[in-house]
Image (cartoon, helix red, strand yellow):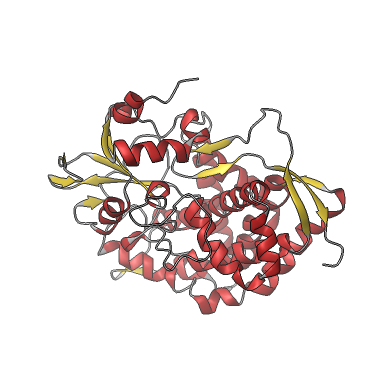
Length: 400
């Protein structure tokens, strides 16, 4: 395996590196301290930006740093554009408004009871065993089942296959990533065709199918692009967050113990855990004009990769940034992004994470990481990050 050296950080940074996946936060800390804006020669060349204020500026300045003119560094093999992520305002706003209406706090609040019932059912399936693979038994199936049932009104029997497609597609270095994107494209195409033959359900899918885009009907490719983004945002990111939360609970048992004593602090804990372990760790932009970031000259056409995960641990914004601290006065984390492309599904993600943590904390005690075959927790890590497996042991809480 390649050693991550100072030269690697300064000139050969590779977001697809398996070494980076295993040492993400340590490497990003070196980048932030020593090379906060640096040019990597990998993948044809791109800038890497890691400090909070620089990342925030790039994210908010969509005129200078575009999503629409190429998604950035190589690796993405999507069959169609993810809409509206790969668009800029004002076109972006049309699709964003269409989606936002279905993920407001009021709409999402109606999902809480069935979401809790789903988490309870999944935990029931393994709680008496005293051990499980948290990713396989809860973190990965849960968001897919919830999203398919409550948001998409899609067949629950398809969840496992689509989850696998989403996971595979999220790893650009995976040799099967292109095939996974194509499989997802086919599934969405067939799903849309089936929904058009069914009575309206009054959901986001109906709204997308009937959308008017600047006075014209939405195209099939645009429909697929919107639904593709919803699926990717609703499945793999939540699964990755839950897996990372569980690792921290096992390594720092005082956190789950404290939250059991003060369950009213769980929503705040979700925010702090997201700051520390964002599942969506970076995003790419294209410079539309010559500009400057952190004293470095950026040329028109350059690719720029901004790291939410690095910004979230910048000591210029957060005191003791690597520590879990529920008493922070402010927590302006960037785990849901920033600017016009901020995550439309953040309210749903918060609900899913909160409910899952509430049920896990009050049904599983004495959480411990079990040995893995590799001796460590393997991660996939490109622009999304998730543990592949989180084997745990626990004591069931019988009074729950």
